[in-house]
Image (cartoon, rainbow, N blue to C red; front, top):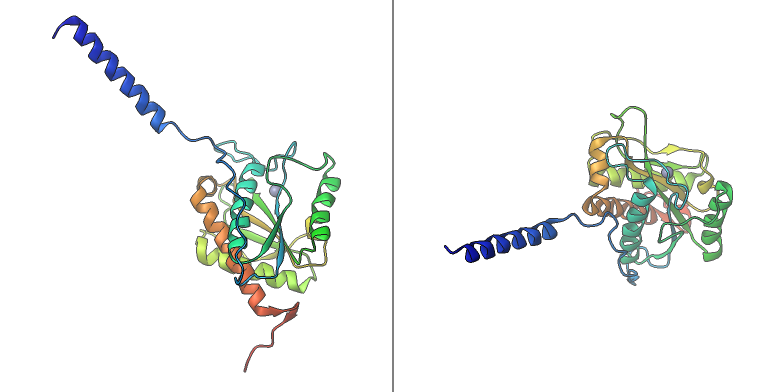
Length: 242
Ligand SMILES: [Zn+2]
């Protein structure tokens, strides 16, 4: 082989390797925000207005994933956007507190009040705040749904979502829905705060960083909401048939 041809072949080989590297380069951590979901009419959540809150944002990152260093606010947003789609596909009108990395106020109480105002002004009849958990012990795992103490409808909603998450996500640790003192749960509509998993647990962190798992989370929460709606009628718990 002539020297020139050899050089050309080496150059070609190097170029194709370069292309290969480009082709397998990891995609950016933040996938593009999907097109605004279309609200389907005739679904089980038809006529319901649901506020979906992606917890934290802006200067408030929330918890930080132990292995990847990803901020909770980013995973919350991606999960909330998946939930927005799933709920809309079931017929709900979905209000979002944020669809980008932002905050309403650096003062935490003012920020949360602005989020609750969106629910109030939009006439929301149900509220779901999306968060990720963390703990000192890296063994702690499993989604957990919180509701306000002595708020029966919220307790029922939390129980239905918790059951659907256990059924669909099959977490290693099966937690129970629990009462929690959160400002986001202070409205008089069924309200829950969903801790989707632990960012301090390697396995759950890895799962929550995939779009596939976040869609399963969204599907589980949506099924829980549908289950709750089917059990209640205008805020009244349906009387079970003998
Ligand atoms: Zn949080």
